[in-house]
Image 1 (cartoon, one colour):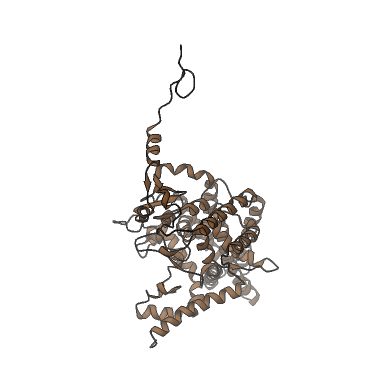
Image 2: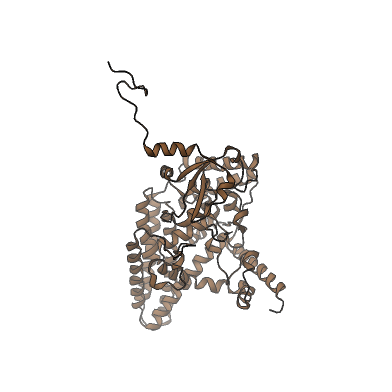
Length: 491
């Protein structure tokens, strides 16, 4: 007669665990200390922690989000992982698992300082807030809303092209129409950037492949910025905003790497070691807006260099070269053929509009106005979001929530809704940084909840008008410049 098997199922022998399952079970029994984790901070030697499990992601440059994964090397990535990834992503973690955190270290910071009960309660609180908002549908997007946004944004492009092509007479009115067409094209680039930003943050589609290919249209084809370049740069910024990275590590914010042109902190000021860099920093409050006006040209060049080696001017490939690689190695790009094709299409249609202008002078004026308009309108919003706010060294940055809130500035709303439209939802920059996958049309409700949460836990929350925020940025630049003048009065 058939005997019962040890797993309780009659007549069937228990299935032996697979080699992978045995390895995982053995790995889970390994415990590692916080001190061990902090030693592995570089892209080539990267350990990170998620929910007290330790993962070795050394050299994993194929990560879909780019090298942002290395911003948490040697650190706790629990909140960063949860806020950047879809719910099902955790199933892919097991192949990187190398152990779990020692029980005694679970209530400590990565540098082994004790967190304290208030901090532990705070972390539980903001994780609970996220779950509540997910339950209430604040992470669900509206298809109708994005159809409206995309169609109205395309109308700006078509109207701009019509102004340039259909007003060819040598009269003041026609000249003004062509100029206005150039300015509007820059606004179209800005608004396309906001749409690509939302799509590539996975706010619009649950299927991320659909989002990626729509991102190629709004990012590469419409705006002229490579999605792969943007993703790698922008996700890193999100993980460590206003953070100065450690030498040889990937834990710094690329958006404040603006020396020798602009210094946002005393740490950056120390890098002004040449007469030219000192002079540039001395006048940075005056040169800020002129620099913003040409910012798009720099971003276009970096995007092209990221995808086409021929456009590389400094050996970095627009940030694509892996830090510390010898010989230099470029990060892989998924669908690189699509990156190249869609960027080429951008320049085809853009210069076709320029060609439709009645003269070479008008065509050049259109190119200048569209690029200056885009550079100013994009960079103005970027500057309002973070410039002049707190700046940290990587080793002394606070927890994820406090880092995002203290380095970020919100912009107050106006009665007509212009600020929300112009900023592309980044008027709610604090909420966007805390919950980057939340669609734009839910940020106002999120704002109400976040403000209450910050008030309850005593976290500083900063919000200004667009005008006042810009003044704060300029005043901060001047404060840094004044330190240069005091140190080098002969200037």
